[in-house]
Image (cartoon, rainbow, N blue to C red; front, side):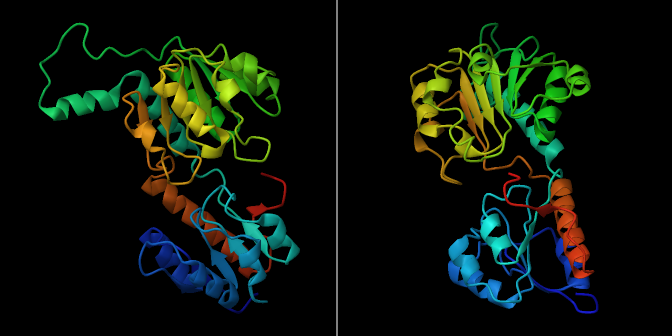
Length: 328
């Protein structure tokens, strides 16, 4: 659409520098507050805009897309995942979908290690004790946790984030193992000093820590189901910074409450932002509000990717981060 400013609707507040640049380049309607759009507001947006910029909190499903006007030609998702978008229906209606891959790799990997350390070193318990006013002072056997070095880490999903986790964990002296849909190239595997397991069951049964770093697809839904969770060692820890649906949260909760697992660190949940209330009372569980990518640098870079996708599309070319059905 050369020579004409794109009409863009943004569904949530973005970092100010991103909103300012979008306003300079496009005919943008920004969100006044940081609440999600209602279904009615989304339905109106898809009839009025050339481009919709949603986030993971917006469900862009088939019924909504059926209401889209002829103008809507691009959904430029602010986020790497596209679970919230019916990509196949969008493409059938001639609407392209783009995302922001690769931006949050380091941030999410950092948070994964933070959760491992937090659970294994009992950081939340220590914070609570220190702030309670009841700390009696240091003692040789008080608040003993464990050491990361020497533990076996099993990474479920060895993509960009999984590999970034592996590099960080190796620096702590952990032994790296992984299960992936496809085995890594020999040179990559060698550089990571990672051991590949074709059988997820066999890997899970031998690891001290499991890190979930795979996307949510029909084939990964409840990949860590009740049967597989029971294969884990009773003192093992599971960390999930990927997608909540990969883990059977009810089964995990039952095992943690029964003392059948060493602990868990969760940044994502099976039911979106709804956390299982029974998890909140457990001292060996860390629950975070989906903070894995929450750095200023990362969120600005995400916005920059959205802008590049918009600008490329406005110039009459395919967005560089185009999503095609079936790639996730």
